Amino acid sequence: MAQNVTMKLNTLTEALHSELADIYDAEQQLVNQLPKIAQAVQSSALKNAIEDHLKETRDQVIRLERVFEMVGRRPERDECQAMQGLLEEAQEVISASGDRQVKDAVLIGALQRVEHYEIAAYGTARAFAQQLDMDDVADLLQESLDEESSADSKLTTLAEGGLFTTGVNSQANRAGESRV
Image (tube, rainbow, N blue to C red):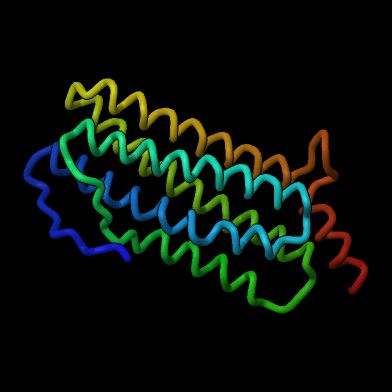
């Protein structure tokens, strides 16, 4: 379980450490929850996207451990309450009754909120590392930022439809219309 790290924000270095501890906890929470989310979805394309991103998330945890080493710190977790809340919202969708295609569409939105949080967190940490002339750290954080942006784009493609699917949202819309 994550610990609450006493936050000191007197220097940009301390701010970077705080961001890293937050992101590290967020990623650990995702490693634990993404398998449950993948199991709950109906769409095989969405399930595959979640499982692919789970692999990336595990790599991001390892990458963050390298970043901690590079900044001379042991990996530490500061409880990321934002991610906890986002994942609780996803769990509410999973537990809700209703049409599975509609639930998949709502889960895509929940997952995109997760991705947007991570994009903001990695972008902030990368900016701090750049300001501190920690180019190697910034490069590793950029790798994760790129993966998060790509995951968000894949979710958008699934929601709107694309080459490989007619789109979860259009399927959910048709399911809802047939009941009206």
